[in-house]
Length: 108
Image (cartoon, rainbow, N blue to C red; front, side, top):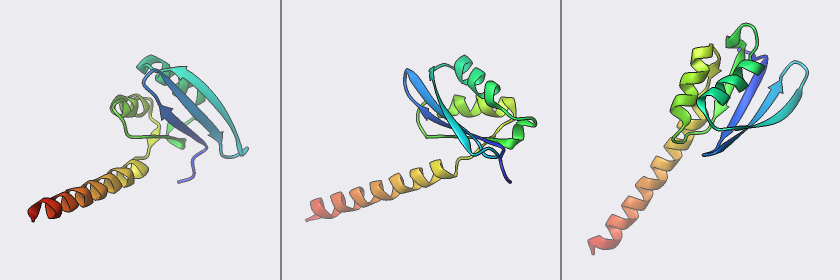
């Protein structure tokens, strides 16, 4: 599916930076907001396309990602977790290597 707009969110504890890209015009703009469900909702509503499913929201995995996902899906936008799943898999692989190394080191 080709998205008309992509909203990338860099989620922070107190502030969030958004990069909003209009894929047809090939332009983008940055916006900073205070981190809260109401502000994230307002940001997405300001930039959402009609229909909302033509808007893709991308964010990182962190402690606020769950409610950000809920806010975006309540509006009707698409949200992709592929990048997040790859990051989780990478961290799981690294953790497994560390545990394996630790077990081998102390087995002697």
